[in-house]
Length: 246
Image (cartoon, rainbow, N blue to C red; front, side, top):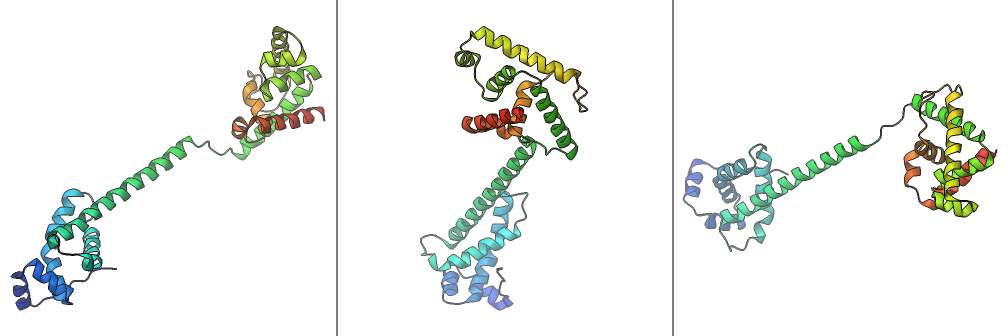
């Protein structure tokens, strides 16, 4: 919707210029469209200065139109407790506040989009997925080269995240023995992965057990595996141990 001013002839314009805002508003309320046009024409220059001063980098024609439309809609609610100019500029102030609110909301959305774009992990490429699948297959094959006891220790320590003390109580052995056996199992697996022709990138590199343990349990979505509840993680670990025995 857009406000379209009513044209006045020279005589009517001269009479209107000598009429007060209160008289023009009363005539407008009585149905005189020319009185409305005179009021708006009288105060539009002041509105233009008002908006230009508060929003210097914003096109103000739309704000003026919105203010005049707001005045049209609120006419019957005006009780004459203040001057027409005060009434009109109170609507203009609300338009400034609304405009600033929308600007800030847009900036917040933009900042959030930038934050998400920066922090979001990039989607793996098909080549990266293939390499990951190959690497997990190699790791599973390497784990099968360990003894049953070493497989169980790796599963308890890395997948079920049991402490050395908890494993020692479970197996009824000293804590130092558990640490030694876990270290030996890790070293044996590292040797298997180092000297085997795995055919993927990273051949011979230092094994990051924490990272690949999570990837094996969590499948492709290693991040989800890191944050899932312990009960679900234990269920995944059980499935992993079943796969090792297959």
